Length: 349
Ligand SMILES: O=P(O)(O)OC[C@H]1O[C@](O)(COP(=O)(O)O)[C@@H](O)[C@@H]1O
Ligand SMILES: [Mg+2]
Ligand SMILES: [Mg+2]
Image 1 (cartoon, protein in one colour):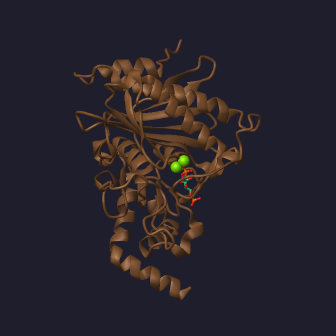
Image 2: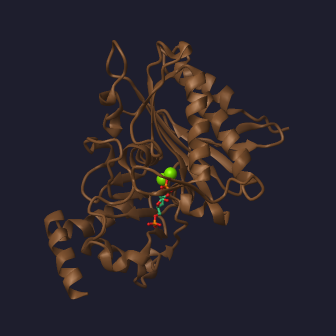
Image 3: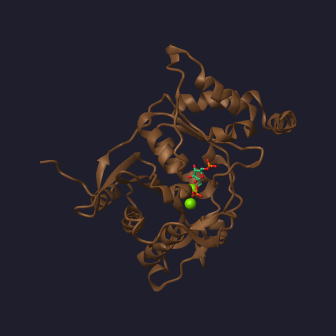
């Protein structure tokens, strides 16, 4: 009989890895697991639950919020508020950070930054979506935690993870000691260890980028796409193009099969689209812990200076040798040149 290990059991077991641990991070991960189950319940029956479609509100990014964006945001904030281990939540769906002030969280020392629902454009069409979370320990020691406790660089993360609501629902996370994946068994309502010690292959044959924006990409990215499409059996090219349009799902696939996901700067988005604090940093921490790489084409994502809560960044993430190859192409065109090339490109157009 196959012994299942639940997320809760695994977290407690792994607590031993941290001699000074008092269980706070374990309880925080538990709270995130609870909220993920509640969101999963709604995602699974979205068509029946009047949770599809627009919420009629807009977030600070100027994006129309989906009902499920708002619902997921509320569920995670509520679970973190009642869990008592979180002193600040920073969310894609909230302009400002949210101080958690409740009787149970007086000594709380963890910051949670999150993308409550990733892949919003796929909600209404029953394609995999996700949740992304990043956890920091507060830096300030007395008084209330502040924005400075939120704006820490990615290499200060103590844990990061994502939930993917796909054909099955999985929670994948790291605390800096490898990456483990858990699949939700609806019959017992538990996340069970299904993917221990996940490792991304050093090489892959999948490239994932929205080629619809090709004409607005930097020359280095165009060059890399051409490289992926060249016929060369020795290097397993041409690669396969796969793009789901949910960052969590595209990166999860590549984590298992090998591959690269790229969301570069474009002519219309000089800093890229994806957000550094609650999308790029947590995914970079996970992929690096699985043996892959993550950069903005030039610099390691986890070393980028975090200055603003909703700051954006380009991202090249995935199998080590594929990211290195893409960076090689980008290096041919330094950022300055890239800017110039846009102008050049647009004019040409
Ligand atoms: O439609 P585009 O421009 O390719 O963007 C898709 C990207 O935008 C996102 O949907 C942005 O995330 P949110 O849905 O959380 O806003 C990513 O999941 C995805 O990788
Ligand atoms: Mg997102
Ligand atoms: Mg989102």
